[in-house]
Amino acid sequence: MTDPTITAHDRYLTLNYPRYPITITHASGSTLTDSTGKTYTDLFAGFGAGILGHCHPDLVAAANDQMNKVWHVGNLLHTEPQTRLAQHIAQKGFNGRSYFCHSGSDANEAAFKLARLHGQNKRHKIIATNQSFHGRGFAAMMATGQDKVRSGFAPYLPGFEHVPYNDLDAVKHKIDPETIAIIVEPIQGEGGMNVPDPAYLPGLRDLCDRHDLLLICDEVWTGCGRTGKWFAYQHSNIEPDILTLGKAIGCGLPVGVMCANERAAKYFDFNHYGGVPHATTLGGAPVPTAVSAAMFDIIERDNLLARAESLGDEITERWNSLAQSTPAVTRVRGKGLFLAVELNPKNACFDNAFDVVAKALDQGLVINACQQNILRIAPPLNIPTDQLNPALTLLEKLITDDT
Ligand SMILES: Cc1ncc(COP(=O)(O)O)c(C=O)c1O
Image (cartoon, rainbow, N blue to C red; front, side, top):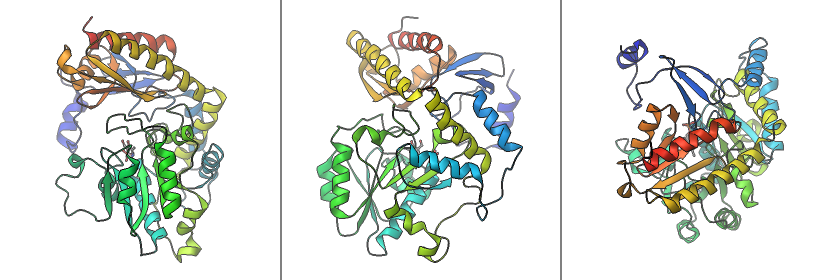
């Protein structure tokens, strides 16, 4: 029998998402339950947003507590959770000022507006990288280095230029007197789980310092402990001027953050600008930001950064052995609990990585493919090992056709 949710969806929603014919009705920890009662181990956590899994009791308590206090008053008044969240972000590594919005794309739009203000009508160009992904808002789409994301949306917004990822010389040659900022993902997620050389981010920082450019780190995927540090740039001993966050920062509720150091943040100052330079009605709303602030406390309390790092190392080692024994696996990509295997479908029992994702769903496992040959996982940082290990075994069997 067709699920009535899916029948109604097909009639009433825009059909922009290629959804699997599964309706999830409940979720808890790292387990999803669908409308037929079938359960799934979730190794992808809603594109990584479920950094603490589903319905974490402490997050539910934080949401309930805030729901009974105040939901929304608008940003002409103060509310305590958004201030507390901004304090957490500043104290966990990026000592900046936060602007709150609803998504990763929103956060990047804010970063680009800030960069343009920093350019003071003299400089406006932003350098981004090929294969990057920065969101679907108009400017975020322009920064995104994938033609398929922009296709059909001409005329394009000017001022965004692209260079190969992990190529400092290419950036150096692209900088001109109109350049104002560089945006980079510390690890490219959607573009293929690409980890740059250790010298890349420090090299970008150096170029930004020498040319008075803003370095924008898009940590929508990599932030909030995903890679074993609060923010992935912390692996490189540098600081960006602007940090953008989405996905995990809301633990599944819509929170985006554009956090800027003093040098940059002053351009969003009401008094400096002489009016409101940027705003959004529901940005920093009390319930999502109360949940987000609680997430920082839980990750710290439960030592989950160290867990992300050590589990990530274990899985990497396990998959490196798989790559040695299986021609279908070429190599392992990623860091912490943001990991992928690069597949060689020519030597495999499947056509492409999407094929493996569909087979996994059939067998009660949620994973993801971001390219034809890249299969990836981003499980909750607190996934129990007795749930993770059998899920990894199943995934490996699907790749090696040993089922
Ligand atoms: C690095 C990066 N930046 C920005 C975005 C856009 O975030 P959102 O989908 O929340 O708008 C994404 C989404 O995948 C992303 O991976």
